[in-house]
Length: 157
Image (cartoon, rainbow, N blue to C red; front, side):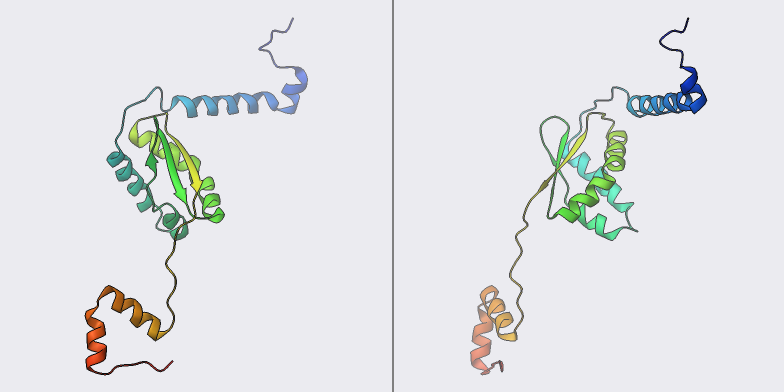
């Protein structure tokens, strides 16, 4: 007598019927909230909205720093965010649903996808001693060498 849409008595007693329908409704709302919005957007518009999102992260400086690089707009509506380490990747993974949802809404494009790529970021060698600092400054400004010679300046190492 029961149709495929009628829940079993066991499900009804366990309370699973209502929970399943609420979950299904939430998923339906999440996907239809943006409808078929596929408005094109430019890299400049993306950068503007990305910066707006960053401005909301004043209480999360590490995440704000991680997201400070604006992602590349690749094929279609795919965004590629380059990050420096696995800790940053985890931070992005945790905020990704909120960020993508916000971008989809703001840019009116339900096809936006965000991917990350781990890339080693080249960093300059740290300079510690005074003589190393002076060498580096003289490379940038050769006139410092003349000044050093003229006044007979030297460092004690």
